[in-house]
Length: 501
Image (cartoon, rainbow, N blue to C red; front, side, top):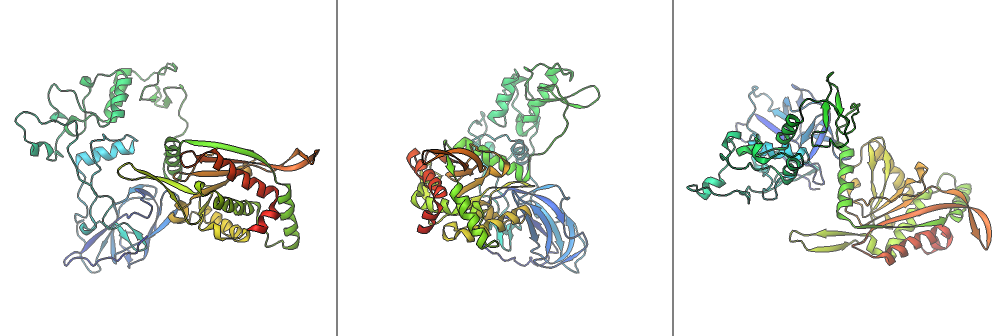
């Protein structure tokens, strides 16, 4: 992340607006956790003004301006989009004035796009994202220590492919902005246009005719809410029949007492939990992983008795400096990735659709950790250069950091391979989901006493299960099996393997 400087305000500028910057890793929004200043307070450059929660960490935001806080844009608990105003600062000694136009108000088309995007509806392929304000327009999108100079994105609008030129209309007229257009501007007698194919499908599945729909978007564009309202009208009184076939887009109704009821199950809604913050990020990552990666899973039962005995011996001689079992396994994993580097890769696609596999000089080992704020995967950078003791110290540090919500975006997003110890939950195995965009994840189950054949005789041994889920595009089963067998052999014969590390 690059450092930045804040330019001085132009002559005569008394009020400056600081927009929420990109806090790293291409984030698009953040939740305002707490204001650390109030309107009327005097602030200096780099003074912390607010705490915001990004996808997985709480970040302190410093002010790039000095002066008097004129206005706080938002309340604690609200979600603010990157590039939207966060705070307005008036130069010291300047009279209070109305807000300057730090950011042009969004057009009707932009608001329509954003509403549908928040609802999880993908806009038509033929439209492009609306360009964000450039940095030289006073966007404030650059912050000391992190940021993205030049605004959020760069792009231009173009006429949708399905838009045609009417007789007597020029191409320039067609491509001109129609921000002031309303529902009544739709061509008379023509079927309305939908904001996305998903909205069109929602209407079709509900048995609605496009000609019967009235769009509230620009130029009569039919939005998701228009279809849902039409479904509600067609359904008549909100009386729950309990029929499982009633599975239309309008999945919630109200009974006569005004209590929300789920239309599909007929049960009353007991709670509503917004998908945001960590939960939203985890959901998006897992869904993308399953959608894009053709994964395969291999597993093996492992006799961990020798490793347990080795650790017990070390603990007896050096009780305060003995690595945990996870640190030993992490060391075996990094050694295994050196022998099977195909699993320490990433598949990327360029703008022209060409794919290539990126291999890395080193291992950033992600450690899955369950916290009160959700699943976190901080990574040990250059784990391949650390000993078992070094890995143990870093794993403990990162675990404490993520539980306090203080992990940096780099610590949470720079992994190349993930190690997941779900045995702490008392389970033996799991078909884990790969932490996109990585290529593999290794899981460790609980270690329990089980009957095991040793030297032809039955014995009670400490057994665990290793599960490897890998991207079948970057390697085949031979590589995955070879890596898994290497780690298993290292656990069963730790003295021999550690002597070679």
